[in-house]
Length: 114
Length: 110
Image (cartoon, rainbow over all chains, first blue to last red):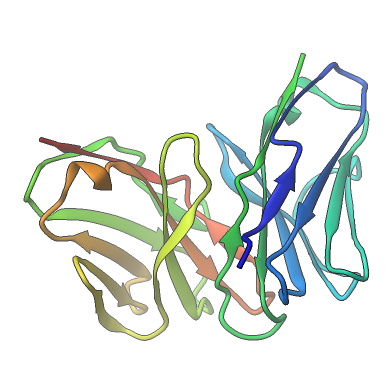
């Protein structure tokens, strides 16, 4: 059974650009969450999607957005990149919306903003 | 006050010793708690979950939860160099999202 797949694994952008990251959850998992991980702040919750609907949102500016498709694959977008957006972006999936909060993480997309 | 607090470490223990990792949380309504292990350059992986007061054992790992004191800990018995990693404590809540601590770096010395 394939795990959570994130693409791209590494990317470098410059300030002001935008970036789109992709996440394919474990087959059968319908909930996808996104987290930002930085050395100073640790893992911070961005948003969660279930059945193509955003169910939860963290305290990030509107430059951070996401969506989920009918096949449960999810994308997140960051517009007008800032240096502080450099981070590891982790996607996690779980099988259902309600129940144990057991997340399985993907390998992450490491974004560097120059 | 952060919602989930952990000592960043590093916590250094000799091989074969017991490593004790601690975590406190501020939200009294939290019902579920998790310990994730993250090796350098890798993604977090779940090692323990605990929902009730008391101890939960799984192999060399024991999670302890004290809701009255808002405290959760992870004990690793017979620590091995392969246990060297960052250990992340997380709590779940009504909204299903997990709130993570910043992690404790554990170094097991051979």
